[in-house]
Image 1 (cartoon, rainbow, N blue to C red):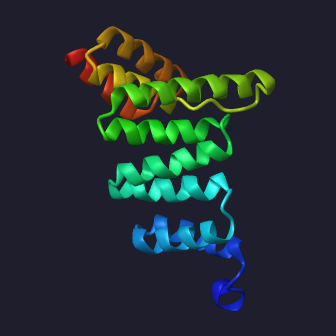
Image 2: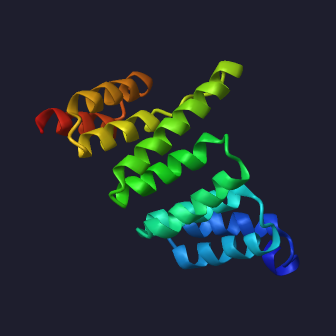
Image 3: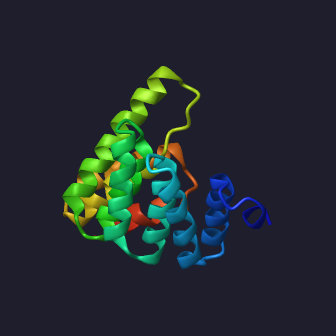
Length: 168
């Protein structure tokens, strides 16, 4: 309704894109986010949102492009590096992924040291574990899976990743 009433109201278009993504209507979500980007070119949040849609569609190269653009607009935000890291990982670019996870961890630690109330993202260490596992560095992978599990002990995905690594 808000889109029909105020076509130029980019916040409505952005939230509509989020809704379409949640409904797995990816093409509509991309159209919404792209229209917002046409109006506001330097908003990292919109690039991250559209990148997540591309990622969920399995289009890792376009996801990487959007996360790279988000990083361009805020080089110290760990979210862009984290998201691009997983895009690199699924594109089988493990060393690039590791570099991004390391940067995400560094920037997140900087933020945490400034404000201890910030919740840490255990997915960063899970990503590092997955990369090390894929590259055959099993001991390093286990160290990172353990760090992820220290932060989120009941996360079954992290437990599964660690178990698979121990099995391999």
